[in-house]
Image (cartoon, rainbow, N blue to C red; front, side, top):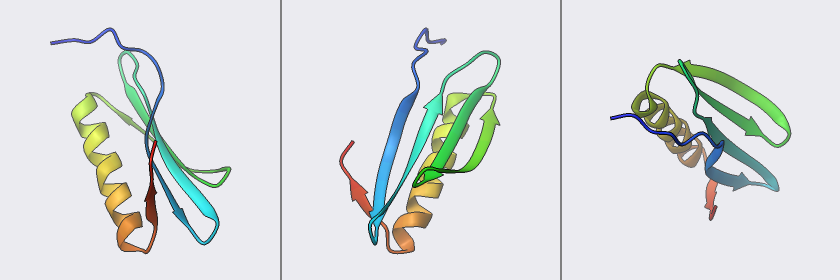
Length: 75
């Protein structure tokens, strides 16, 4: 199944000590891009063939941050 969705989407936001971090998913063809920021600083960019791998990676990053003392912010 393919999707026609093509808008960048913030997947999650977290905060700790006055700082924020967030991940954004950018769907594309042939690759999808996952980026995450801490404050205004770009931390990492990764490309994936399929959505599932990108979304799984975003979830792992979120869980790592939560384990490091960050707290969720409602998107």
